[in-house]
Image (cartoon, rainbow, N blue to C red; front, top):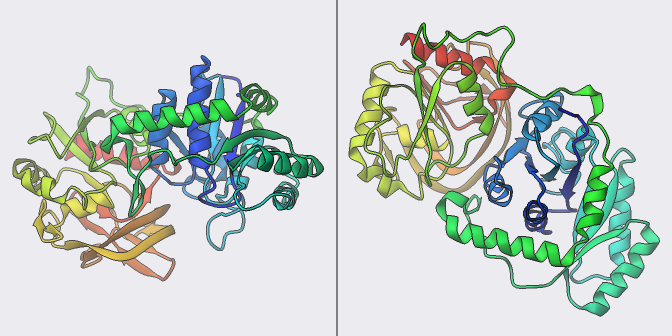
Length: 458
């Protein structure tokens, strides 16, 4: 595939400026014009990519220079954009906000530079007029390697307000590519960890994405935005697309050994998963089957391994608890020594109880909701051998939750974590690896291969 896929990065001076509305609406508007659109999100967020998928009909993918390393941003982008006419990348936080204490690492600006992509700055123009030019000039000139190719003005009050903003921006030399009026907010409800995921409100989410598309189509210069994307040129560094298949790994052919079934929890309670995880498991020789712990009373037939990612079990605790047949099936699978990998929400589901309601009882621990938000990137090292990693394996992860587990680790912890303070966390028991850390397996493909091999032999 060509490494010169047209692309735009949608950024903003700060969170709350309208990035998600503009990025999602632009994706949908381009798709409505007949373009195959590749959707991407900077950072570890799982929720926005669900809306991106609705807008484009393609899997939303993350580009995280901290979790995966800067060297994988280009290849992962090209993998996701394979066969597409244009790519739209939604940024995270403010344009230059990156991993705490790490300079530009993992910021939207960093990813834009790694992709060689022009940036469109979404500015909340409410309560300002001429000052918008100083703001845009500052962001456009802060880093000469970041190309701010245009601005979209959001929450503009009137024709006169728009006129004043345009006059000011003429002096800044940054073209105005769109003006969105101050309108009632598109229905995208939030709760304790951000937007409500698509899987929990599919019909309403479809309507919300359509509203975003209409707003962007009416207020933005789509031909100019497309032309800016097409001027991006080749992705720097001569990147080739990432592939889940390792050149040194050859899965056992199906006619010699049946592919082990790896069940992956899904549905409204478990919506957090990176697309590359399924691709890596499949490339390693697994038969990946999704199931919904809210509805399915049995694990998929022949399950040899189980992956339970993140999500919102605290919201669905009563329904998860009520599904006693599945809870028992999960406990029996784990008790047999079969590989089980659980992250964050999966960790809570494996506990004895969550907010006083019975869960699977695989781990001798309890979980509860708290008022405290735990958020941030983590450097981690595997404390001992597990179904995911050999002792000493280093990975980077991300924590994002308002829950607590007691105790915070088992006799054999999953990870040693350096920040924000040195500690151990998680549980390794027989075939179970359970932890609060979300990790991106593309950074360490051996994780998926090791897990599938254990599924074959356990």
